[in-house]
Length: 65
Image 1: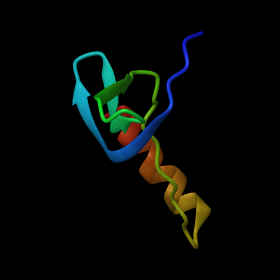
Image 2: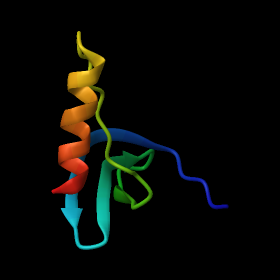
Image 3: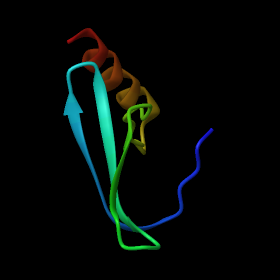
C-alpha cells in the first residue's frame, strides 16, 4: 500500500453513476496539490424516532419506492 502525508484543506463528495465519491483536497509538505478519491463510501444517515413502529413503516415505504 502506498502512503502519502499531506495537509487536508477541503473535503467534498458527489454522487456518480455507480456510487458516491469522496474527494480529499490537500497539499504535501513541499506544497504540491493533491486530490485523493475514495469510492468506497456507502452513504448513510441516522434516524431517531419516538415511535419505532412509525419509523419502520416509513423505512418500508422508502424501500418499496
